[in-house]
Length: 456
Image (tube, rainbow, N blue to C red):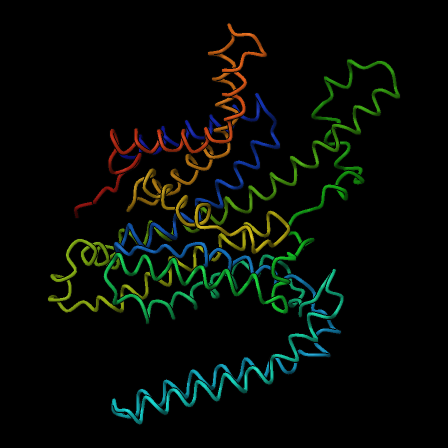
């Protein structure tokens, strides 16, 4: 009961802070914060599964997030027919050739004993395969990227509803995690962290420079939405009537009909933005609730208890007959797949895909801070960490400005010290994040909502 009370109080406080933003700033800003808090919560659940359940350090969250975003592009963007005509078939052959190279190398390694001949055979397959790949894909890529480069310059996608990309993003990220896990999970914890970070950088580099696949740094804009567009809502009679009903008191105070019409038009514009963000928040909330239910069931299932046993004492679990490597690979894939879902959700909300924006500070280390602050090993704590840290990340500047104005209210507006503090507001975000993290680590070293072990 005590644990549930802590969770309820923590979430009520968090909800209250978001409501305060709506009251003192705007509901549009509050809902934007809420949407990104929900997306961050999905990311932290993925990271928490890996670290909180199994003790795996994954610094490659950025790469899985980007793959989720790429899935949104490949699923929702209509195919560029001209690009497919000039180079699509060659790119399909290139993908088949890559698969043949992989299977050939795997076949040689599995069926021949370790020797110089085997090494030469593997090297020959890779070298010949890469040469053929270059000969087939090189001209095709140039032709594809030359097709209306200002607007397209890539193959496009499948033209399906963007919600499907959330599932595809999970498969993309999970597939990459499987490959990385097969290679890197045998490494020591610190080496694993370095390896996952470097591989995520490779993923970002590929997405940024392979224009035929994702337009690279030229970005993809105007992605489809699973919710209505503001401009469409503003023309709907039912929506105009709904806004008029909600703001009836304000509109009744205006006697001039022309002024009243202008006010209603402005309210409809503002209301359409709020309505769209409410729709997004509803969709994201459904995803968070579903994942939270699943992860909670998994945490307290026999499988979850086994994972915590492996985390706490890997040697003892191995001695009891548990396949530690297999379980580590499974949970590595599951956690990464959830992060892939979050990446697709974020691109869906933004409506654009910008490979250049994926940076470790935002999409890896900030997510780790969220997990640590919330409480690793506790799903509710990880979600709360996503809310709290993102809220502070966004509201640090307004809070800093308020505090500066409050404490320097006795100084003149042209005072050099006051102006210096105001100019330094962008850096207060990092200061407040650091101070907040230090306080939590000092007084709540296991996080705001630490892991609770149920004894049956």
